[in-house]
Amino acid sequence: MFKTVLFPIDQSREAREAADVVANIVQKYSSRLVLLSVVEEPSPEAPSGDPMVSPEVVAKLLENARTLFSQQDIQAEILERQGKPAFTICDVADEIGADLIIMGCRGLGLTEEGATDSVTTRVINLSPCPVLIVP
Image (cartoon, rainbow, N blue to C red; front, side):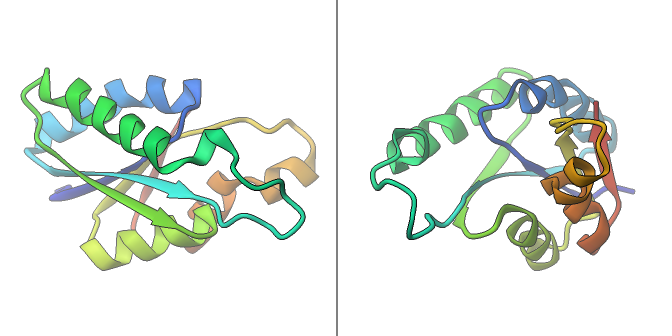
């Protein structure tokens, strides 16, 4: 049913909590797991050299996630991309033929403005496949 699962990760608590759901689904369906980290392109006004998005931090995040899954006997492929997160997640899902995207929900708030601007909402609206949001 879910041959390929895409799991976009960042340093959020919600992404860490979603990892258990990802592991359960991948094991149940013997799915291929692809971990994705999207580094947002820096805006011209942003200060350069943000340590939260350095290549080293992203590489370590992806390796830690791969290690977490390998401890559960799950092989994971890792991808790192640069771009706008929602669009990049959907592009990668299409590129790899994902059958499911699983992501944590940051919960930017209950205001309509926060809901329409969230990466999660944009992925739901643009995704080429089903999206499972883990609260």
